[in-house]
Image (cartoon, rainbow over all chains, first blue to last red; front, side, top):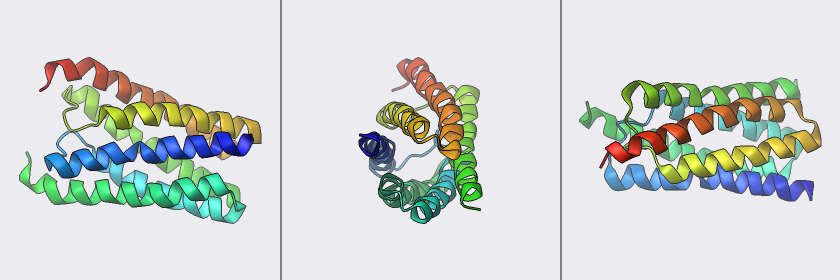
Length: 86
Length: 86
């Protein structure tokens, strides 16, 4: 039961980044997206993944492998498109 | 040592939302912020908090109490300002 709550949490917080990734690459606009947010998030998720691996905690590992990919996608989009914005 | 990695991860992912919260309330613009992202994130963080409480895991609890507040702040900002945007 506990692990299902963790998995649900992981699916929600990880999948939440998908619409943001789609929005960035569809509109090619990231004006209101904070660079500091996406940068710190990407680094932070990397450390959550390390933590999950050490604890061998399936929900943490599951959530943070995919979260890292999505977060990096937002960060790359922000870096790419911000030079065309003011 | 393990717990410090978890705390570092929690501090980074949680604090990452602070610049996004500041950006939303300073600019009053959330055009490029996905409503689905902020909504799913807020609900997901709530479940991470439940998971942390069940496991009595300090980094999870610490990260997700503050994360929930910041995420809710972005969600409220998005709901408030999106009606003035197109």
